[in-house]
Structures are given as C-alpha cells and as structure tokens.
Length: 386
Image (cartoon, rainbow, N blue to C red):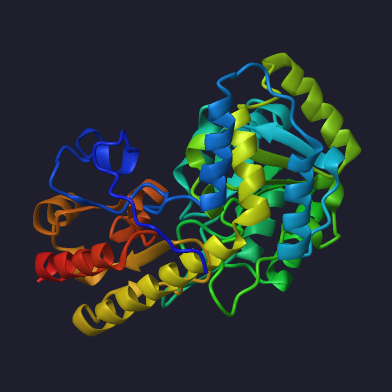
C-alpha cells in the first residue's frame, strides 16, 4: 500500500491552517474545519505534474481522450455507474456548478428545496440567485438522520418546487443513502416534476459496510437528474479546480450548453486535468490507505466521546471524512463560540453554519488528518467542556 504522508501545512498559504485568524479571530486553534486533507496527494499525481512542469510551456491545453476514459472507468469500476462521454461537462468546482445549475434550470423566485443540516453553499447558490430556499429538515433520532418524505411531498405539491439539491453522501451528517431511500426521493421528484441535482463530491469516501449509489445509476427519471462530482475530495485535489457535471438527458445538455456558451467557461487548467486523470488511473492504493486512517480516526474519536463526554451524540459516519457531533448537553448553558475557541482551542465548523439556530450546539470535525491531531482535539474538547 502506498505510504500516506502527513504534511505540515502551516505557512504554505493553506486556507485551513493559515486562514484561521481571518475566519476565527485567533491564531492558537487546532484547525479541523475546511474539508480538505492534511495528506500529500497520490505519488502518481505529483510525478505527472512535475513532468508537465519540466516542459516549461503552459499554453492552451487540449483535453485528451484518456482524461475522459480515466473518469468513466473509475465510475464503472468503483460504483457500477456507466457514464457516457457525451454526458460530461466541465466546472471549476461543484460549488460553481451548483450556482450555474440554479441559474440555468430555475427562474427568479422559484422554490429550490434542500434538507438541513445542509452544506452552506446550498443556501448561497439559491439565495444569491434570487430563488427561494425551501427547507425540509432531515428527521433525526439519536443521531441517525432520514429524509422526511411526507413533508417533502406536501411542500413539493403546495409550493411548486422546481429543484431539489441532494447531498450524497451527506455533508455534514455523514449518511450514505440506501438505494431504497434514493428511489423514494426520485419518485417524488418525478411525480412533481422536480429537477434533482445530486452533489456526489464525497462519493469515494465511503466507510466499511456502506455502499455509495450514484443517483443517476438507478435508472429512474434520468431525464431530470444532474449529478456533480470531482476528484477533489477523493484525492485531495481541491486546488486543481476540476469537476464534472453529468447530464444524461439530451434536452438538459442542450439547455446547459446554451447557458455555458454565455458565460464561456468551457475548460479548465491543464494542471487540473493532468492531476485528475493520473489520480483516477493510479490513486486507488493511496485512497485505500487514506480510508483506513479516516476510519481509525473516527473510531478513536467516537470511543473517546462515548467514554469522556457520554451525553454527546455522535452521528454514525458512513461516508465523507466529516464527523457530526451534538454537544447540546455541554453547550446549552454556555457561549458556544467562546467555549469552543477560548476553552477548547479548536477551529471547527459550527452547526449553525449548516442551517441556523436548530443546529447551534452541533459541530463538524474534519478527520482527514493525522491521528495525533484528532487525539489532541478530543482532549481539548474534554478539558474545555468540563
């Protein structure tokens, strides 16, 4: 197995480590917030980029067929998803793609549904484009989350929802949706003519005992499903700014292509294409090593919390490397920010970032780092919450 190398990212212009003061107003915090990894990318990626850089010419890049083949093969072998080249469109990231899709397939004042807790850009791509956020919160029982299908159907019918944005696997709760759950959601979208946009950027970060089902692979309502994914979470390549928009339906492709021509963002950097292609072709061994570390960190943190902070509720991590923790018994009589920053010395994602007051006692912790950092974070939590 390829060796996984932890990288000290301080003073490397790293948002997670060097952007702490700007975001949190303090420097002495352990950063477990931004959703990237503290590990060097697969060795094959570094070698390929070095070879490209040695040539010294960085003119216009022609995307090779091998780039598409690498992604198509990965989807087929990893997820049993048969993607056609003609479905694939470029985006510099899943977040820009979400903004584009809202602009392309909805109108001003249209209702776009999400389910909180939700990744913050889901709100931004709707509100910043003059659409209406329609929130149907997930149902939670002892840290386990499910979709509220009855309420979703009622609101889809009454508010004429035009789009539902699904997070699969779900950030921040760590759910990997089962096939029957996705089928039921897709059936609702089909019944009420709702475009389903599936953010599947975490599709490869799946813990043992779980299986990722791409929404488009189910074979139902494919003319109204748009999937988004990337190699960025899988192989720690976020700065390469290269993501995939998958449009299986010809009419949707035509509408999107007409929109894309107007903004004229059709292709990315050669560095991004080279990194992504080589990661898909040679990075599986590296990914398996990283998944092992993530699972070990999750087990360590969960057991620590169960032992030392027994009233906290940790949601089962099925996918992503993001741990969702309900700390209400320890924070409800305290200033949340002051406690977590001044006493726990942690830079984490606050729950209210994912949907407001209902989630203010929750935190999201990034586990994609060395175990020593997770151990330190747990000790900090224990001391700060005593």
